[in-house]
Image 1 (cartoon, rainbow, N blue to C red):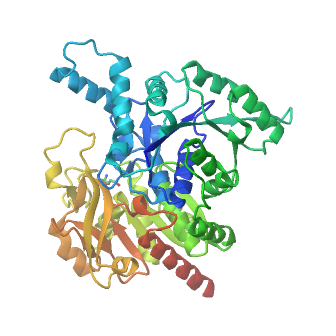
Image 2: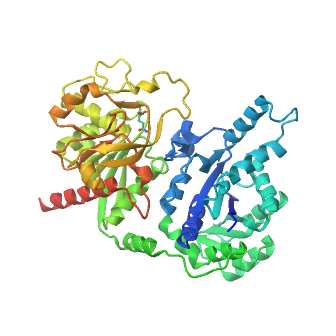
Image 3: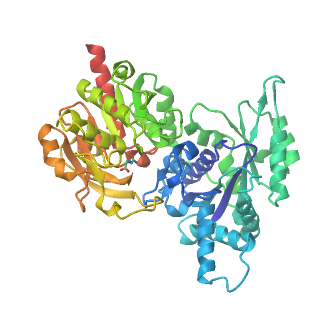
Length: 539
Ligand code: GLN
């Protein structure tokens, strides 16, 4: 089968969930046995989102091959279990950088270098790069931004050209918004009509429209949209608000979106997608009534997307443990000795979030001291793990000014220090220790038991590390190094085994947790939280 290309564009407003729709299409096609991947083209000029503040762009996701990627790639992986790479996320910055490099090399042989054809050619080359591997039946390409933005024009123009080049192997899905006007008690189709017109103006006729809506869209209204937007009524799909994003593939299948795509690509529609396991997950999700209270201590509490993968991992792990996750965001900048009891005593487990820089760090120490002393299941991730180490050094080892050299370069006790190979690095972009590395686990430790293995591979994003000069002192006092990199012996996991569950990982287990394969460490953490909750109740 020739590779089919599905483009997903968005209109009217941003944040409609193009990533979720792309992921849902991929899930359904994969469940029908097709080989699928998803890529995202982002219109900003940053080379990658690695240098972006979470306030700008939410969480930075990391692929196994060490690319700092848009958080939508997290959705792609969580929905589909495919592993994305650097090739799955391209920005305008990367496109321009590559064109300018070629120009400097003289590759354009004296030609004037222009947006059309040079930038669009480079975009098209990147769109088709994964297709050329021969590994995929479907390549879904999500175009970031909204149709009509100046920034996304070259991408949209490339899609227009690709429709000619790819012919029947190309499909365009356009996601728009149908607002409900409460005063008129009416859904309004005009924004959709305008947005489709905008696409038509640049030469693209969408094949399928997906309409985000709060209310049910009537068949009559679908016919009206079809008429005005030049598509058939069965190509108008509604994406109504649902209680969980994981319902979306099911809702899309109910309206035959997967069949529609196959038919439009000239592929015979046979049987049904195998969504058995997915349905079981949803059944558990809706069946879980008993709550589990987890506190997430971090400085970006007002940003729901800043800890996206952690939130989703916790949710998945809770559902597999038949619990409804109640996540409490606890602002690390505001947490003090005076209110820590009040804020944490209702928690069944506490996560200490990853992060960079000094802001909010003291609150993390306050939380950690309280959790350690009250033996609350506690999970430190990346900076959270480093804070576990610092808090232990200060309050158990008595090294009062212990710190990470990230926060205090002249600390007398640099229990967390810059990694050697980071010392000569000055550029901030893409230079951290990134991507998946192997980790050996100490047999019998909590992580080894949780994973059911003594070697795992997880993803990283950091510059600082546990200072092994202090290892013996920590181990003697009860904080054990239970995971290390087999090649460099870098400490990847610490644990206080005498506690209920007190584990910190230098790596980010949240990046590998998916709906169908939840991360074992999160599963085990929630299990410990449930047990602790029961013990509290029995007292
Ligand atoms: N700031 C820390 C480091 O660079 C931790 C990074 C993180 O939490 N992702 O090592």
